[in-house]
Image (tube, rainbow, N blue to C red; front, top):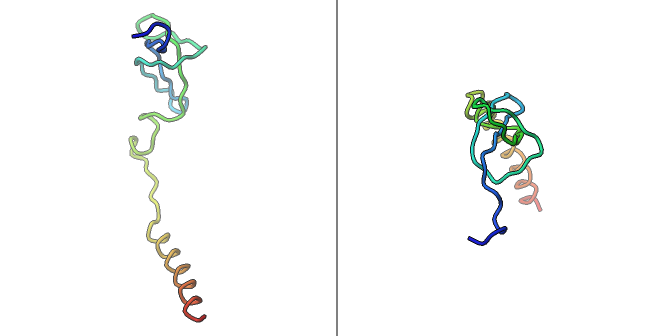
Length: 88
């Protein structure tokens, strides 16, 4: 591996800002902020907006999407355009 070509691969804490969930992993991302982890060491912290702790799919708080209504809207729009093109 060439020297000074690859970014530094180190331990980093990712913090979910919406749920205050934190996890320690390895990454090449860099941050000016640091945080003291449970083991007493200080690590760079990367703040993220969505993680498995706050994403609706993983938390079970999925919003029900009215697909039937969307299909009906599409059919009414398409049928109007189809009828107008047949009249010409």
